[in-house]
Length: 360
Image (cartoon, rainbow, N blue to C red; front, side, top):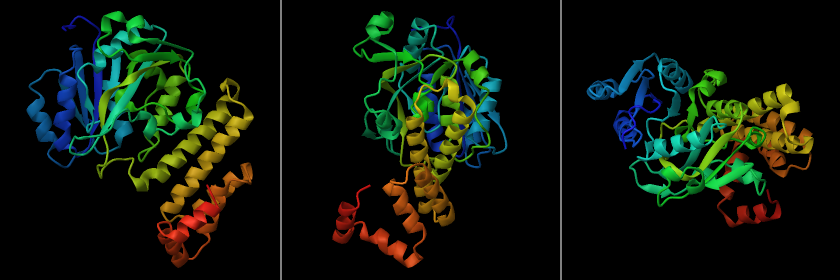
């Protein structure tokens, strides 16, 4: 479908030392059925063959490249937004892949829902080599969906065929929309490479937090986005999200940074906007307990015992019966040899017996 006279979508692609996967990501953006796109690639100081890859692609006038000293993914995305010209903005990480109809589907939904400023979708997980690892991975990756349980997330919903019949195909996914800023305090619900948002919303949010270089910037950005009004979710996977790569920011050692960033963002939100949050004090206390507990566990995994103990005590101050926090506190005080022994015991019959006797 030709839509050269339709609104321009700016695709922001930050990249750092991913030359091997960058071409695949960019090809998926160039092959969109929504053809009126510009692709702004921000090379965040790559030292591999990324510059050569981009030089070979610049024959396509839809691609523009920026290069900066390494400042992190937030700074790269912000530079891309500042340089973009589109009425709509989408984000694509350089190791992910869009399905060809992603933008057309999302544009149809935003046209049908003028009150919604942002739309995101589900995703499939693929391995480093591109094979499918898990379909509909969003709710598996983001535990906030499980924390919400049966709580309704959106106020309204419709099948795509009822909302935007011109976009309906054999896929007729559910589209849901409404305000979710309070629900976002349970944790992130939005995956950045699936997002399409209106430019004026992106400008009002004000950019990604460049101080969060090792995790948590996406959550803070999407939380700010959802505060602006109604957003929409299309319950179909429109991207392939690559997992298992060693360079991913979500790898194990960075979990502590994610945990602390989440805790600090939630604390700031409660402190500054309590009157706008449609959650009870009990629910907020539970969220904070979970956040402190996560920070404690992640710190312990990184060998930071004093910080683990401090976070565990913060969780216990809010909920003295939190068993997982007591476990972390106990482990934080054990000598190194006993900690190693406790970890080894997890896979033994003794470990299973202890776990059964003291459930999480």
